[in-house]
Structure formats: structure tokens, C-alpha cells
Amino acid sequence: MNRFIRHSDWRPMGIDDLEPEADEALRSEGNVSVIAGPGAGKTELLAQRACYLLQTGVCAPPFSILAISYKRDSARNLQQRVGLRCGPVLSRRFRSMTFDAFAKSLVDRFLPAIPPAWRPSRGYTIENISEAACKEFLRALRPPDGVANPRAIHEIREAEFLRDCFYGSPLDQAVSRAPMLSSGRRRNSGITGSTGCDLLASHSPCSGGSPN
Image 1 (spheres, rainbow, N blue to C red):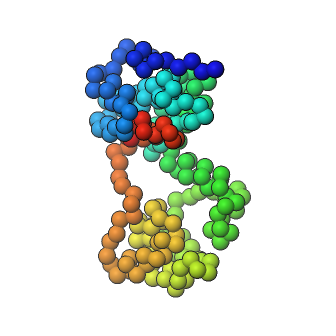
Image 2 (cartoon, rainbow, N blue to C red):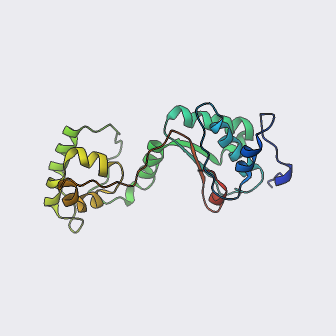
């Protein structure tokens, strides 16, 4: 049986203490946006936040926490910090991954559910796609019946497809926007930039207490 620490008794692990503003953000019951420059301690705050959620039972079994980073070094660093502070048992319910690794894990997990026309073969690899490769891909693509107008694919410009569609939207949505893209008008894909800060989110019902 898990023994959780009372919220009022919990203290940061592996460090002396936190600044009042950081401690307030760490214990917040809602979503918190933390903005700070390099070396200010954002990764440490995220590690402490994960410990707080796990050790106090805010994120209790069987739920777990997912942390998303842009770089592998950041993801590995955060995973190691949580492991050192929480120990091996609690840190099993904490996963720190890059965006790419998380996306691939979804493809691998739900591979049989992907429509055959879009499903990658077993043992597939992930590579950075060039405009030339994108053009060849679009020329050879034959979408399933009912997904979109196949001729609309040839109206997509390779550079705009990579920028506005390939990295942000399902292909059927990208094809449906082809006339807009080919007319020269711009549309955001819904993907926003970041300063590289780590993101921490926990699976429901713990997500209400995670910093973003």
C-alpha cells in the first residue's frame, strides 16, 4: 500500500529549498506557465513538481506523468532527476520523452489501427524529409476513396506542405486545404514555437495539477 506525504509536510527533494514563487507554482492545483531564462532552474522545478505530484498522491496509481521536451538531452536529464529524487518505484510512473519519441510511440502502439494506405511497414525508420522527397511522395500518393480529391494533392506546393501541413495536420486535412495553399495565402497549422522549455503533463485525472 502506498504511503503518501501530506501536502503540508512535503519538502523539495535533493535541494535546500525553493523560492516562494517557485514553491507556489509547484504546489498549484491548476496549470501554471513558467517563463525564465537559461539556467534559471526550470528543469529542476519540473523534477520537483513531478516528485510533488507522485509523493503526495495527487497523481496516484495507476495514473502516470508524461513530460515532453524538444531535445533528447533535456528529456534524459529530467528523467534522471526525477529518478534520483523519487526513487525507482515512483519514477516508474514518470516518462520523459521528446516530441518525436512520443509521436513514434503512438504510431507503434496503434499501428494496427492505422488505415492500411497510411500504415508504415514494420521496422520503419524516421528521416528528415526534403522538398525533393516530399514531391516524389506526393506524386506517388494515392489516398483511399472518400478521404479527399486525389487531384488536389498535385496542387500542393512542397515547401508549403512541409511547413504548414506535414508537421502539423493529418494528411486528409492537408489535402483539403490544398486550394488555399496553392493560392498563395498562408495558414497556421496549429503548431507554435517554444523557447525549448520542458513541458510537464500528467494523464487524467492528474492533469489539472501539472505545469505547462
